[in-house]
Length: 155
Image (cartoon, rainbow, N blue to C red; front, side):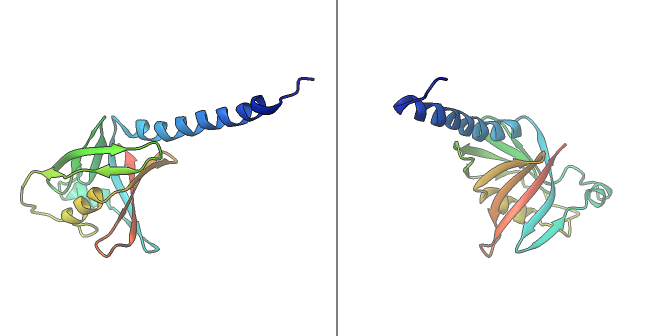
């Protein structure tokens, strides 16, 4: 039987852990890139608001509240304006979104569940990104500073 001693023992334990952690952190962000994600839920202060996609489609706003991640740029659709801006993410999925810019169209229909300016505020304040069970989660805060999670599904 082979015995692991001293440095070899610790290397055998630590190296696989380092590789696992670095792969998991990068894979989550990479998996978010190149897809269009549509907002399905907002979770804040123990409440969940479900975005009624059928109602949005009936109001000719089926493409509202989306997000896309590319290498260093976030973009998407509010309700009805498009937005874009820079972002960075570290190995622990800590997200930093720079100043967002958007088009300036007037809305004829505004969804009851979420106003466009609130959505833009959530996105700009997002501080963490995760993918759980195939859904993208953005961790942010609402206007009162309460932790809020935006849940997106891949389109």
